[in-house]
Length: 266
Image 1 (tube, rainbow, N blue to C red):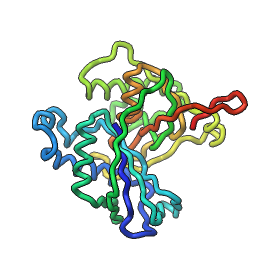
Image 2: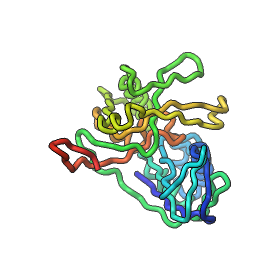
Image 3: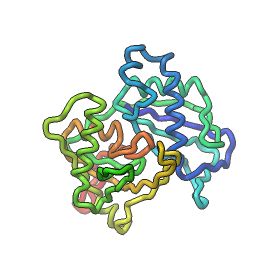
Image 4: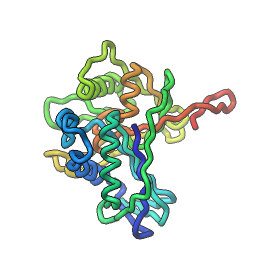
Protein backbone atom coordinates (compact mmCIF):
# COMPACT_ATOMS: atom_id res chain seq x y z
CA UNK A 1 0.00 0.00 0.00
CA UNK A 2 1.13 3.53 -0.80
CA UNK A 3 0.82 6.54 1.50
CA UNK A 4 1.06 9.96 -0.13
CA UNK A 5 1.82 12.96 2.10
CA UNK A 6 1.00 16.43 0.77
CA UNK A 7 3.14 18.95 2.65
CA UNK A 8 2.97 22.75 2.55
CA UNK A 9 6.08 24.68 3.57
CA UNK A 10 5.40 27.04 6.47
CA UNK A 11 7.96 29.49 5.09
CA UNK A 12 8.21 30.05 1.31
CA UNK A 13 11.49 29.99 -0.57
CA UNK A 14 13.01 27.35 1.67
CA UNK A 15 16.03 25.14 1.09
CA UNK A 16 16.80 21.59 2.17
CA UNK A 17 19.76 19.27 1.50
CA UNK A 18 19.61 17.27 -1.73
CA UNK A 19 19.86 14.11 0.36
CA UNK A 20 17.30 13.89 3.18
CA UNK A 21 17.18 10.07 3.35
CA UNK A 22 18.43 9.88 6.93
CA UNK A 23 16.05 12.62 8.13
CA UNK A 24 12.98 10.98 6.59
CA UNK A 25 13.99 7.59 7.98
CA UNK A 26 14.36 9.19 11.41
CA UNK A 27 10.82 10.62 11.12
CA UNK A 28 9.42 7.17 10.32
CA UNK A 29 11.35 5.58 13.18
CA UNK A 30 10.09 8.29 15.52
CA UNK A 31 6.51 7.66 14.40
CA UNK A 32 6.76 3.92 15.16
CA UNK A 33 7.35 4.72 18.84
CA UNK A 34 3.71 5.73 19.20
CA UNK A 35 2.22 2.89 17.12
CA UNK A 36 1.08 1.25 20.37
CA UNK A 37 -1.78 3.77 20.50
CA UNK A 38 -3.08 2.64 17.11
CA UNK A 39 -2.16 -1.06 16.79
CA UNK A 40 -3.33 -4.26 18.41
CA UNK A 41 -0.74 -5.50 20.98
CA UNK A 42 -0.37 -8.81 19.13
CA UNK A 43 0.55 -7.00 15.92
CA UNK A 44 3.08 -4.87 17.80
CA UNK A 45 4.79 -7.99 19.18
CA UNK A 46 4.84 -9.70 15.79
CA UNK A 47 6.12 -6.73 13.80
CA UNK A 48 8.61 -5.20 16.26
CA UNK A 49 8.04 -1.77 14.74
CA UNK A 50 11.26 -0.25 16.08
CA UNK A 51 13.34 -2.53 13.83
CA UNK A 52 10.79 -2.87 11.00
CA UNK A 53 12.42 -2.21 7.62
CA UNK A 54 10.01 -3.62 5.01
CA UNK A 55 9.17 -0.29 3.47
CA UNK A 56 10.60 2.38 1.21
CA UNK A 57 10.05 6.05 0.53
CA UNK A 58 10.59 8.47 -2.32
CA UNK A 59 12.65 11.56 -2.75
CA UNK A 60 10.75 14.74 -1.95
CA UNK A 61 8.83 15.87 -5.03
CA UNK A 62 9.20 19.65 -5.01
CA UNK A 63 7.50 21.57 -7.87
CA UNK A 64 9.67 24.04 -9.78
CA UNK A 65 12.64 23.21 -7.63
CA UNK A 66 16.10 24.70 -8.17
CA UNK A 67 19.43 23.12 -7.32
CA UNK A 68 22.04 25.30 -5.62
CA UNK A 69 25.23 23.32 -5.03
CA UNK A 70 24.17 20.61 -2.56
CA UNK A 71 20.76 22.05 -1.65
CA UNK A 72 17.29 22.10 -3.20
CA UNK A 73 15.41 25.39 -3.28
CA UNK A 74 11.60 25.26 -3.03
CA UNK A 75 8.91 27.92 -3.29
CA UNK A 76 5.36 28.15 -1.95
CA UNK A 77 3.87 25.09 -3.67
CA UNK A 78 3.14 21.93 -1.65
CA UNK A 79 5.65 19.10 -1.88
CA UNK A 80 4.89 15.37 -1.90
CA UNK A 81 6.46 12.43 -0.09
CA UNK A 82 5.54 8.80 -0.91
CA UNK A 83 5.92 5.90 1.52
CA UNK A 84 5.20 2.31 0.51
CA UNK A 85 5.02 -1.06 2.27
CA UNK A 86 3.25 -4.41 1.85
CA UNK A 87 2.22 -4.03 5.51
CA UNK A 88 -1.12 -2.20 5.49
CA UNK A 89 -1.11 -1.84 9.29
CA UNK A 90 2.26 -0.08 9.14
CA UNK A 91 1.02 2.39 6.52
CA UNK A 92 -2.23 3.13 8.35
CA UNK A 93 -0.45 3.66 11.66
CA UNK A 94 2.00 6.05 9.98
CA UNK A 95 -0.96 7.96 8.57
CA UNK A 96 -2.55 8.32 12.00
CA UNK A 97 0.66 9.47 13.68
CA UNK A 98 1.49 12.03 10.98
CA UNK A 99 -2.04 13.43 11.26
CA UNK A 100 -1.55 13.78 15.01
CA UNK A 101 1.69 15.66 14.46
CA UNK A 102 0.17 18.03 11.86
CA UNK A 103 3.65 19.48 11.30
CA UNK A 104 6.58 17.56 9.85
CA UNK A 105 10.09 18.95 10.13
CA UNK A 106 12.89 17.98 7.75
CA UNK A 107 16.15 19.37 9.06
CA UNK A 108 15.24 23.01 9.82
CA UNK A 109 12.29 23.28 7.40
CA UNK A 110 8.79 22.83 8.79
CA UNK A 111 5.93 21.56 6.63
CA UNK A 112 2.22 21.56 7.47
CA UNK A 113 0.49 18.31 6.60
CA UNK A 114 -2.24 19.35 4.16
CA UNK A 115 -3.68 15.86 3.60
CA UNK A 116 -2.78 12.20 3.16
CA UNK A 117 -3.90 9.79 0.45
CA UNK A 118 -3.85 6.00 0.19
CA UNK A 119 -3.27 4.01 -2.97
CA UNK A 120 -3.80 0.27 -3.20
CA UNK A 121 -1.29 -1.87 -5.06
CA UNK A 122 -2.50 -2.08 -8.68
CA UNK A 123 -2.86 -5.25 -10.69
CA UNK A 124 0.55 -5.68 -12.27
CA UNK A 125 0.94 -6.97 -15.80
CA UNK A 126 2.94 -10.10 -16.55
CA UNK A 127 5.85 -7.83 -17.49
CA UNK A 128 5.21 -4.55 -15.64
CA UNK A 129 6.91 -1.24 -16.42
CA UNK A 130 8.17 1.06 -13.68
CA UNK A 131 9.95 4.33 -13.20
CA UNK A 132 12.12 5.04 -10.16
CA UNK A 133 10.94 7.47 -7.49
CA UNK A 134 14.29 6.96 -5.77
CA UNK A 135 17.56 5.29 -6.82
CA UNK A 136 17.96 1.53 -6.23
CA UNK A 137 21.03 -0.23 -4.81
CA UNK A 138 22.28 -3.82 -4.75
CA UNK A 139 25.37 -5.24 -3.05
CA UNK A 140 27.56 -8.27 -3.54
CA UNK A 141 27.98 -10.23 -0.26
CA UNK A 142 31.30 -9.64 1.52
CA UNK A 143 32.96 -11.27 4.53
CA UNK A 144 33.84 -7.86 5.95
CA UNK A 145 31.50 -5.01 6.88
CA UNK A 146 32.47 -3.15 3.73
CA UNK A 147 29.91 -2.98 0.91
CA UNK A 148 30.64 -3.82 -2.71
CA UNK A 149 27.91 -2.28 -4.81
CA UNK A 150 26.71 -3.83 -8.05
CA UNK A 151 26.31 -1.59 -11.08
CA UNK A 152 23.90 -2.01 -14.03
CA UNK A 153 26.62 -3.30 -16.36
CA UNK A 154 27.68 -6.12 -14.00
CA UNK A 155 26.86 -9.55 -15.42
CA UNK A 156 25.68 -10.94 -12.06
CA UNK A 157 23.38 -8.05 -11.11
CA UNK A 158 20.15 -10.02 -11.51
CA UNK A 159 21.56 -12.98 -9.59
CA UNK A 160 22.30 -10.89 -6.51
CA UNK A 161 19.12 -8.86 -6.93
CA UNK A 162 17.11 -12.10 -6.79
CA UNK A 163 19.01 -13.23 -3.71
CA UNK A 164 18.47 -9.92 -1.90
CA UNK A 165 14.76 -9.68 -2.73
CA UNK A 166 14.10 -13.32 -1.83
CA UNK A 167 15.93 -12.88 1.47
CA UNK A 168 13.78 -9.85 2.30
CA UNK A 169 10.63 -11.68 1.16
CA UNK A 170 11.41 -14.63 3.45
CA UNK A 171 12.11 -12.33 6.40
CA UNK A 172 8.76 -10.57 6.01
CA UNK A 173 6.41 -13.39 4.99
CA UNK A 174 8.21 -16.26 6.73
CA UNK A 175 8.01 -18.47 3.66
CA UNK A 176 10.30 -19.54 0.83
CA UNK A 177 9.47 -19.30 -2.85
CA UNK A 178 10.15 -22.46 -4.85
CA UNK A 179 11.93 -20.86 -7.81
CA UNK A 180 12.61 -17.19 -7.04
CA UNK A 181 13.71 -15.14 -10.02
CA UNK A 182 13.94 -11.43 -10.75
CA UNK A 183 15.41 -9.67 -13.76
CA UNK A 184 15.74 -5.94 -14.49
CA UNK A 185 15.67 -4.53 -18.02
CA UNK A 186 16.46 -0.84 -18.28
CA UNK A 187 14.63 1.44 -20.72
CA UNK A 188 17.02 1.57 -23.71
CA UNK A 189 15.78 5.00 -24.83
CA UNK A 190 16.47 6.49 -21.41
CA UNK A 191 19.90 4.83 -21.18
CA UNK A 192 20.78 6.16 -24.64
CA UNK A 193 19.53 9.64 -23.80
CA UNK A 194 21.62 9.64 -20.62
CA UNK A 195 24.62 8.23 -22.51
CA UNK A 196 24.56 5.18 -20.20
CA UNK A 197 25.04 7.41 -17.15
CA UNK A 198 22.23 6.02 -14.99
CA UNK A 199 24.17 5.62 -11.74
CA UNK A 200 24.07 7.91 -8.72
CA UNK A 201 26.28 8.21 -5.66
CA UNK A 202 24.15 8.88 -2.57
CA UNK A 203 25.62 9.69 0.83
CA UNK A 204 23.93 8.20 3.89
CA UNK A 205 24.80 9.96 7.12
CA UNK A 206 24.74 8.08 10.44
CA UNK A 207 24.46 4.66 8.81
CA UNK A 208 24.44 2.19 11.72
CA UNK A 209 27.96 1.84 13.16
CA UNK A 210 29.73 3.03 10.01
CA UNK A 211 28.73 6.64 10.54
CA UNK A 212 28.86 7.51 6.85
CA UNK A 213 28.19 5.41 3.75
CA UNK A 214 28.45 6.19 0.05
CA UNK A 215 25.85 4.16 -1.82
CA UNK A 216 26.35 3.45 -5.52
CA UNK A 217 22.89 3.16 -7.03
CA UNK A 218 21.02 3.27 -10.35
CA UNK A 219 18.11 5.41 -11.49
CA UNK A 220 16.17 4.57 -14.67
CA UNK A 221 12.78 3.52 -16.02
CA UNK A 222 12.76 -0.27 -16.12
CA UNK A 223 10.91 -3.51 -16.71
CA UNK A 224 10.78 -6.27 -14.11
CA UNK A 225 10.50 -9.92 -15.12
CA UNK A 226 10.31 -12.82 -12.73
CA UNK A 227 8.35 -14.54 -9.99
CA UNK A 228 5.07 -12.60 -9.58
CA UNK A 229 5.40 -12.59 -5.78
CA UNK A 230 8.87 -11.03 -5.98
CA UNK A 231 7.82 -8.46 -8.58
CA UNK A 232 4.91 -7.36 -6.40
CA UNK A 233 7.12 -7.32 -3.31
CA UNK A 234 9.70 -5.15 -5.11
CA UNK A 235 6.95 -2.68 -5.98
CA UNK A 236 5.52 -2.55 -2.46
CA UNK A 237 8.68 -2.81 -0.32
CA UNK A 238 11.28 -1.34 -2.66
CA UNK A 239 13.69 -2.80 -5.21
CA UNK A 240 17.06 -3.94 -3.93
CA UNK A 241 18.58 -3.04 -0.56
CA UNK A 242 18.71 -0.06 1.84
CA UNK A 243 15.02 0.53 1.13
CA UNK A 244 14.36 1.76 4.68
CA UNK A 245 16.84 4.55 3.83
CA UNK A 246 14.72 5.58 0.86
CA UNK A 247 16.18 3.46 -1.93
CA UNK A 248 14.39 1.44 -4.60
CA UNK A 249 10.94 3.03 -4.66
CA UNK A 250 9.11 2.25 -7.90
CA UNK A 251 6.14 3.84 -9.64
CA UNK A 252 4.03 1.65 -11.88
CA UNK A 253 3.51 3.05 -15.38
CA UNK A 254 1.29 1.73 -18.17
CA UNK A 255 2.86 1.39 -21.63
CA UNK A 256 -0.07 2.53 -23.75
CA UNK A 257 1.46 4.66 -26.50
CA UNK A 258 3.28 3.75 -29.65
CA UNK A 259 5.64 5.99 -31.60
CA UNK A 260 6.64 4.73 -35.05
CA UNK A 261 5.77 1.21 -33.99
CA UNK A 262 7.83 1.49 -30.81
CA UNK A 263 6.15 1.31 -27.45
CA UNK A 264 6.95 3.95 -24.85
CA UNK A 265 5.81 4.41 -21.25
CA UNK A 266 3.66 7.21 -19.88
